[in-house]
Length: 528
Image (cartoon, rainbow, N blue to C red; front, side):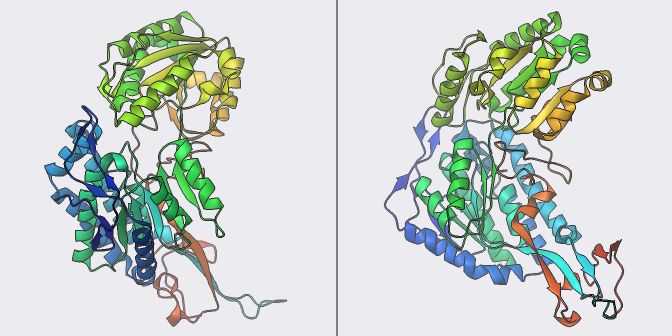
């Protein structure tokens, strides 16, 4: 049952008088529930509870923490079809999409349970003492990772489950041992409410400390208060460049700056190399048209730039691509704000010098996203930074270069990206290695053929890139390495073995792989 309340730890709370409503973007109809925005007092209470729960939660065994994450996944599944239907109703996306997204969300939680049991995330290093070393004795030093403290997580508009209430940021922060406060996204208030209650049921079943998870409804002011709060130690965010940068700047204005892990804008350029393009321009165009239109283009990995060298093959590619996208239905976007932003930004782009619109650019209304292709010459693209910006929606721009030198100049001129794709044969790469080399400086994930939509949740995934793709290119928001954002190293010097954390003890009671005096081993140490 959706309550419309905030959850300050285990306690439902509705002290405010500002009411938020949930909307169905297919017709702008209003859902019946009223959601109460959190007051400043409630936000402070949520942070205070998180701070109070921190020491107790981080002391809980990794096994019990793993069981907690698995129980959250079970409780989300127990919500059944009602969760899928509500998420669909608030987003305009089909129920089938949320069957997959729910699976992704639960698998993420279970993956981090496995990470906790594996223990590699602790990154244990031990250098034993050499007291008789000359000229200076060597002390005993043992290093591991520990949690950092309460984390604020901002729900994402385009993934109401996988990047929101119990999504990747929350799962990795909880796995690391940190309490989490979620600022629910205003576009899927009911979905957020349902998942919050699932998390709270898991807390109750697993006897977790009160305050290990809270959820507050609200807008910009609520988010700002969380980021400013001195007891918040990190922020996870998925969304627009404007929103992520505002949070990043705010966090760095604090007396104690904190890390903001924001995944933001990306055009995900794909470079159409000559030999590969000439072999099958129509097939490639069809593949990219489907990728551009997938989910109404509302993926941060949607291919927004397609870069090739002017040729008959590129002409054929463009003709097929624009035709295929023109035939795609206009589909409801996530909400009215995103639909308006899509047409506003797209309108600015297609009015730029040198840009050719290939299709009907008229807004059909009703929050529907109409796919569109545009084309621009390489020189105009290089001279206009406006054309380098992300347009969130089913739009792509083909950049026609006069030669390989211009293509390389474009690769070097691009901003940071989540992904870059080389549509190429091996011969293409060998003939023009400088394109791939340039992209390694620009992207977090470099694809050889295929399309960038689709982000596998696994150990090797890198979902983050140089700014403005994300605020910290060294980290990922997807995959097991996401936990590293919410831990920090601590080194214990000359501590008695009996007082050390289990991960650092001589007997290695957790059975971890550890680097001991430079050697990776699971062996126990002789008493030092």
